[in-house]
Length: 267
Image (cartoon, rainbow, N blue to C red; front, side, top):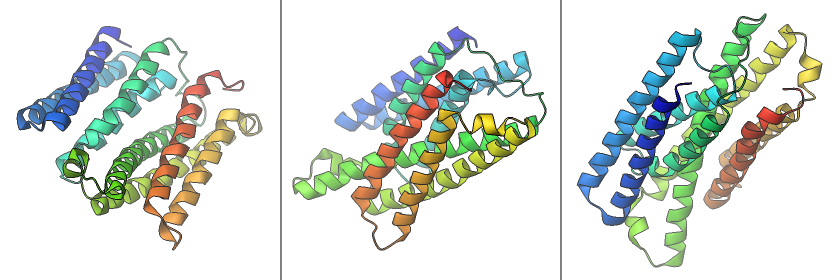
């Protein structure tokens, strides 16, 4: 990776987060414009970084965990920026940016990892696996961000002391719709990623070995738990706060699964 370029992208995201936070507190439209501008140019810088990596190594920069995180961070913020632009959830970026900043730090720390061979047998399945996992992970981040916003709004209503947070964030109905849509897409895409990963392992004749990997086991467990949450969302047992809390808690497990995959014994 080009460390100087990626550090510039990281700095741009951090500046954008600070501006979003200041705008959230002070409600100055100029700060909001600057925050979105910083995020927009940082996204372009991130795209340039990914394209330069592709031109240098000949694949779309997803050969190891660090590159996974670099690509995933870009997709997360791109989806969040587009969702906020469409007016579906103002300040969504304020809640997505901290998660992305943490991921970027891990990407920098894990930059020296060895790459996966994308020209190996069954690499076609690997491309599908990678694409679905990244897309699903990005959708789940939006689900988590909207869930946190939902919990903040709900707590304001229950306290009966509506503060500035209530006035600034979208309504509970808008957040609930965004949470449901992003959760549903995230679960479906992540499941397709797991399924194509199994096919990939089968073509490399290492299916039995891969299924012993604790990271794979945790991934299947996380996917199952998200399906359970989604089924409750459809049922009469649905409770907005409970679904939101469950989404956040299961994401913590998913985050630990992704980060610890670098240390899994079977790889």
